[in-house]
Image (cartoon, rainbow, N blue to C red; front, side, top):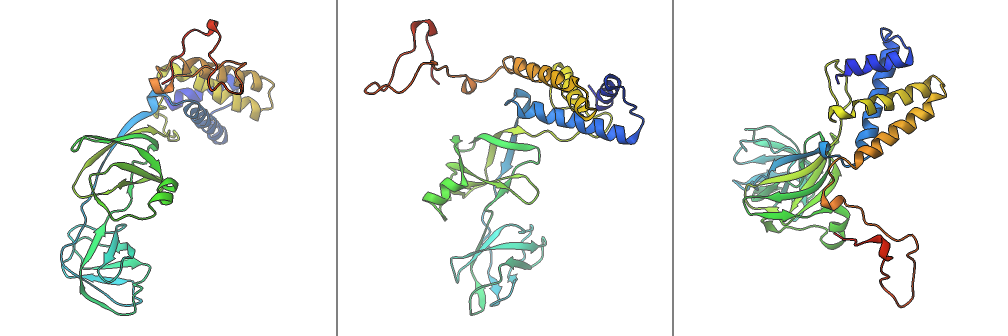
Length: 302
């Protein structure tokens, strides 16, 4: 259902005049809130997607000059591609500086913080490395990752776990893990491969998409058309609440009931199977496992 059709349906059921700009703005917001409510209720199959990132090789060609307490550095050989947002390590120290500004084909670049050594660096060797990669703006979160060139499943781990066991590493090689760092300045999911890749790789991610607000009349939501009535009910519940109409609670209950019904029809994967537990299962001293009553049948744990 297109956005304009959904808006007209909500307006008709609420007896609102959608030709009024203020009313249109309200209905648009209710529909977008309803879409968010649906998307956040379950790991729906229609939210699953893939994203592919190409890793970058370290840059070590030539030498570099740096002046003490200065943010400007000069490469002996101008990098052909922009090095902005990569990190540089100089032969004079183990520290890594972020390259905050660089134009492709230009020899000079800006780093942050300023070069911290007390002496100038002249014709020093260096390593420029990509520490952080960003996924597509539509990605909400990652659930698996893999590579094909060196076939491997890459476990996805948190930055806090890495900080406990390997606060900083310089190892290079074929990535064995993916480290999530939260979001970049644009709100995109940010990650690092571990160890740092020593070759160009395509890393494929299995992700869940995040819905974007609908705005154009021809926009359609992410979910299949069978969700349209549920989408309308969600928006109506917001509308009735706005109008202080006592139908708000019932409409909201109807909406949530439809959400629950559709969860069981969304073809959940094996990793989504529910694990049943006996209601009378408790702490039994000396018995690490108490079987379920016979009427529970056989329960498989995955």
